[in-house]
Length: 230
Image (cartoon, one colour):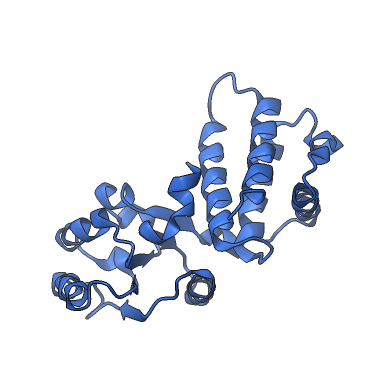
């Protein structure tokens, strides 16, 4: 999993957000922290309120023109594209070339066809509209500080002992909020942690879930990611 996530330049991203400012901020940070740098950045916006199939077809020519040039292609309001148009981009997303990074932006994940969703990494920025709880923020900062010092002492914090389902869910939500705004870790580490937190949230509905083991697993995963050697 680490190799897959760390090679982020090969993974098409689907950013879910209701805020243009939030999306632009994410893109600026993504560009600044991505190496080698992008030589060309192309932004495609809806024509007459929708992304058209002709716009998608134009991308094929764009890539073939200078195939070796590192390029970022941003498609805004991708959820405005009809099913036929979304299907037209599948081949490009499947190729995942090291020289071309796709970032799709949408407000409504449900309007994106399943075959697209299965070929991208979804980053949900909608959570950032919520307020980060100060209590959870301090716990997360403690985890980061001790992890960087190669210490797992935070596992013994009373808040992390005998957790209930509500605590774990709130911790994961605040974890997502925190890492969407932090600059303490690099972009790859942030994406790894956020995506894993969504996976853990899906597990919370499982029957006979061992809550302590689940929380410990989350905390140790964060520690491991923070200590990945770049």
